[in-house]
Structure formats: structure tokens, C-alpha cells
Length: 141
Image (tube, rainbow, N blue to C red; front, side, top):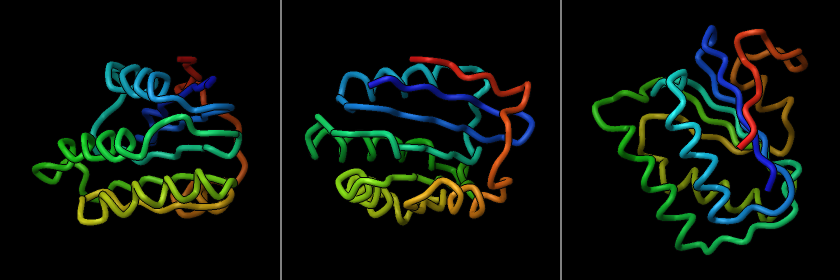
């Protein structure tokens, strides 16, 4: 699973892109890298692009537990006002993203799942098409 992310500190937003086959190990690796990145701040918006994911090799138990583990960031209202957008073209990935949305529906960040990146960007208040900014270089994991 090639994955990469960038953090635009000027707008407080995390972008991630994942391609190919998603495994538990690689998904954990991506989130550990993001979690250790000093530019990542709790409460920033997030845009996760899964449109190029072809298959998920992760159990639903892992994905549920993985999603629940993020609830620790919601304590104390730190994520109040934050928005998280998942973009998934394939039905399987869309369904798993909806599972994440449902598990965290009573959490402070508002989560929505989209079929295309343009709609997600619009919801986040981002230009539909834009070049990356200098403060947001991609990091491969």
C-alpha cells in the first residue's frame, strides 16, 4: 500500500492518499508517522483520499478497534469544529469509511464520506482544484 500524507500548517489540514492494497501493518505505519509528525495538531481538518485503493486486507475487528483508538483525541473537545472527509470510489472502501463515520458519530469531529475528491474539498472549504502549497510537502510512508 503506497501511502503518503502532507500537512498544510497554514490551513491546519491533513491530506492523505492511499493506493493499492491496504493492510493492517501499512495502515498502522501511516498513522504512526502522522502521529509522530510535529506539524500534526489535534483539531485540524483531514482529507483522506482512498479512490486508488484496490483492496483491503484488514479484518473488520482491526478496523473497528483502530477507529475507536482515535476517540482518545476527541476528549476535552480538542476536535470540536474539526471535519474529516473520506473519499472512496469502490463500494468496499466506501462501506468501511462509513463504518468509521458511524463509530465516531457522537465524537466532536464531523465525519463525512464522499465518492469524489471535488465534493470532499468543497465540503472542507478548499478550492476544488489546487496545487500543493510550499508548507505542505508529501511524506511517503
